[in-house]
Image 1 (cartoon, rainbow, N blue to C red):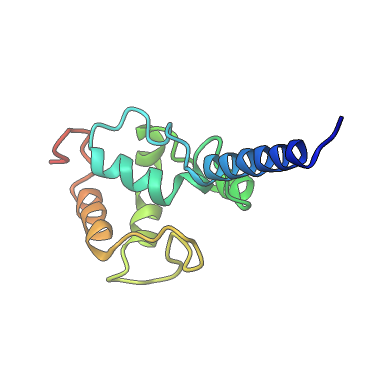
Image 2 (image 1 turned 45 degrees about the horizontal axis):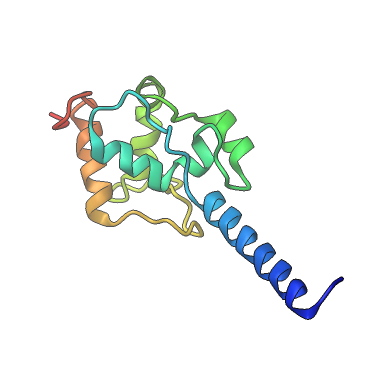
Amino acid sequence: MITVRSCAGLALGAVGALAMSHAAAARPPSQAMRGTLYAPARAFVQKNCAACHSQGGTNGQHDRAYRIMRLDTYADWLASTKIILAVVDTRHLDGKVMPPPKATAQPSDAERLRIVEWLERGSPNTADGK
C-alpha cells in the first residue's frame, strides 16, 4: 500500500542520493599528481586542475581538456611545465589563464605565486619543493 509517508520517504531518499552524487561529482579526483612529493602542488592541481586534466575528472570540458594536457602524475606535470607556467602566472599574462575565469575554483594570488615559484625552480620533486 502506498501512503503519503512512504512517498515522502522515497522523495527524501532520492533527494539525498542526488545530493550525494552531486557532491561526489564536484570533488576533483584524488589521484591527480600521483608521485608528487611537494604537497602544495598536489593540492593546487587537485583543487584547481583535476576536474578537467585528471583521469576521472568531472568537468563538462574534461574529455577535450584531458586530451590536450594530463596531470595524473608528476611525470605528466614535468612534460607540461612551460604551458602550466604560462597559464598560471598572472603577473606576465600572455594569453589564457587557468583555471578559466568562469570556473568555480580559483586559486588565490598567493597560491598561484607559490606554484609559479616552484615551476621556476624546476619543480623539484621534494617535500619542501626546493
